[in-house]
Image (cartoon, rainbow, N blue to C red; front, side):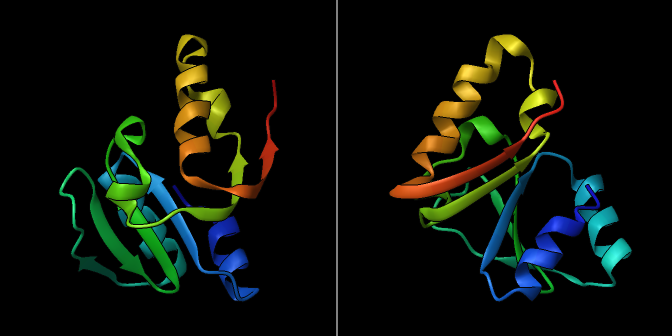
Length: 114
């Protein structure tokens, strides 16, 4: 959606990426922040890749995300209430996908309101 966190993290010098299932939410993000949405090529067509200002955005189903589809693994993950939006039955799968996207010594900051 309108994540200010991605933009702030990018302004701190981090290379940031987000996964969003809704194209409408991506459009809202770029309008909110005054960015232009530019298509990028991925090796694996399971997700669409976009560049929006300093942020890389992947459009598609979180549960198919993998290092191969995103083209990399990450050193840090920030989850601001995304896990609480996931059906409780699917949370273990959500966490497994998140873990697969992280390098072995990566850190996770998770803010959950439940």
